Amino acid sequence: MKARVTVTLKTGVLDPQGKAIEGALKSLGVAGVESVRQGKVFDIELSATNKAAAETELKIACEKLLANMVVENYRIDIA
Amino acid sequence: MNAAIILFPGSNREGDVARALQQASGKKPKIIWHADHDLPKGTDLVVLPGGFSYGDYLRCGSIAGRANIMDAVRAHAARGGLVLGICNGFQILCESGLLPGVLMRNRDLRFVCKMQHLKVENTSTRFSSHYAPGQVIKVAIAHGEGNFEADAETIARIEGEGRVAFRYCDAAGNVGGAANPNGSTNDIAGFYSEKLNVLGLMPHPENLIDPLVGGTDGRAMFQSLVATKTKAA
Image 1 (cartoon, rainbow over the protein chains, first blue to last red):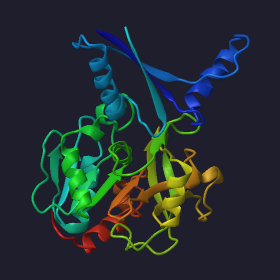
Image 2: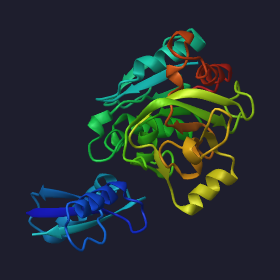
Image 3: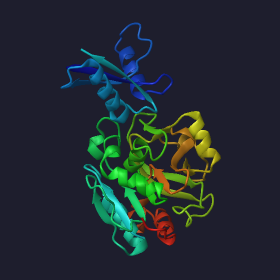
Image 4: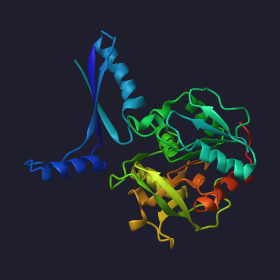
């Protein structure tokens, strides 16, 4: 089973990297960029065959390691 | 003073802090590998040294914060044992839950490596008794992620309980403004746990213990630690 975990900064947390990318896109002349927030993507292969069990394990993975819950949110998508 | 320094893959200041502790105590600290489960019997102080544990992968300090030895470090702290996290060690303390909040990328996105003045905010702890109240010290900083952030309630508690250890200031002791090198909330360079037995700080006092290499303003921290012998684990 394949899963994708997306970790993003919570709303309101300053993201200097996103800001720098936003500035770079604007200076490249990309039109209409209003804001950029940078995050992380993890593609994870699991031996589980049951979607619910996979989701339970992935939640543990996110909360114990992949996301810092002080400043980040996560989203789990199971294929 | 029995000190144990935890060595993670990518730590690089363990030798510096060992030298600083040995200078103050006359006793050589033990170096403990991160994959071990136990601290040496009778450990008074655990040090998480600076460096780039696990290459700063995922988030600074995140993987080291979940190492085997960290359970023993948490138990040591819960018993009232002393824990000092410097630079990457501070990041590890936040990632492991021993201190609240998080160290974010520096405001200006630059790795900052320079000498920095700090104001000593609290001289009544086991880490700081050899400093004078309000003393301004000059030590080295070298980090890319030293911008301390926490929710407003956590910041209010840290401030209200007098847990700020050091703030960034200029040579005259004026706190903040251009003297803040990384955007850290309330110019916090280091702060204590609720029981004042865990200290995390971004600057490197262990590198300022010899006039030959720029000053001795870091010595007082190690002298303070040695002077206040604590109950062994």
